Image (cartoon, rainbow, N blue to C red):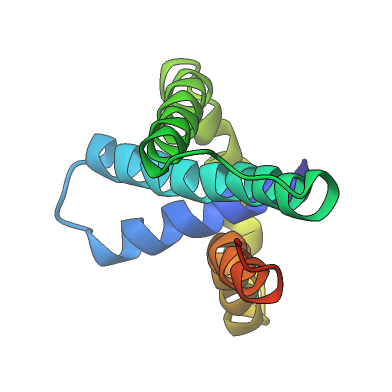
Length: 135
């Protein structure tokens, strides 16, 4: 859980540094939705790897796959909106990591790890499609 909270903090800190003039609520919303895209990507990667590797099956049509993916993204956004925005868990994360971030000497490494954590499911989905092509 600590790594996920830190990843969310990195996303929030990135958007906060880029948009200093915008209101805090905008930064909170964009961070939450960006994190939601990452979580949805991981869920879709796990689902795709299960279907392709273990079941040797896939969706029967592209519209069904699109509806499923949209449902996963929408559900993850709704759940994370409730957790981070409504329950204000993101403010607790910011208070927890903000002081540590200012003292941390390995900021660039942490940014690279965060980028890999966010883009990882999409890179893995592409490699899964290459390694196990749909026939």
